[in-house]
Image 1 (cartoon, rainbow, N blue to C red):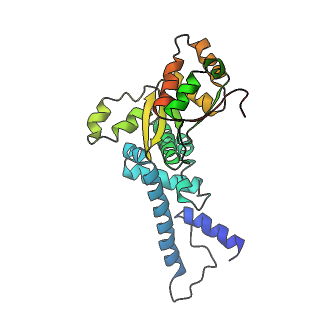
Image 2: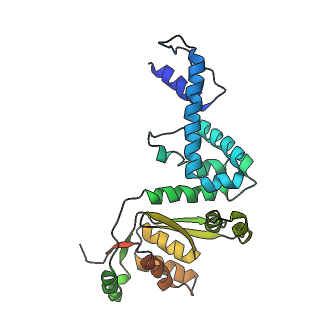
Image 3: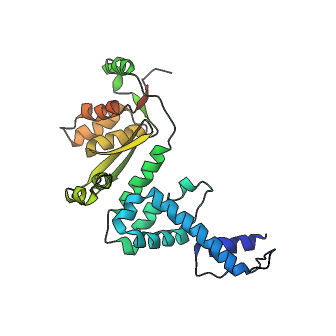
Length: 261
């Protein structure tokens, strides 16, 4: 099969308005265009179903029909780049942000970011957290903590939003979604923390300052430099609470102390 035919097939598979690529032949007496249409429908249905599985709350927020149209538009603009189906949808949130029909639901793109982070957290590498004894020993060395650098659980993730994405996500996990949504203020900014325990990913809203500190630690900043940023801007910033979140969720897997190898 020539490169030109492969490119034509790839384009036609994404767009149902495209005709069957010229040059396709059948070994049996059948219409190539008809069989290609069936194949295209199966490919598109599989990819749309994959997005629906990855972004169930997004689908619930917009309804099944709108979601199918959104997913089809995304497929045409952002075809799969990997044979691993789990990786499909990495560009979905950015696509939604620029998709005019979704403009009336401004938190939809951030919800897609949260649901994508959920999938990545679920499939992140396993890790072993520090034990209680190790944490006690660490916290007792206050003179070294300022320059300490934390390695956190690969499954831990943060999604910061101008909207209440953590609460909206949580409401959709309840049996009575409508009642749960009644207590949510969508326009309330939230920072969602994702953690995994016993293969189950949990999402909870945390204070913005704690989320920013944790993000700096993820990015490799020392504890002291990360904390000083927020203590300068927010004198009431509670470093203990932010560290307490990481300890409570067993998210600290290693701490590099100054002078240690």
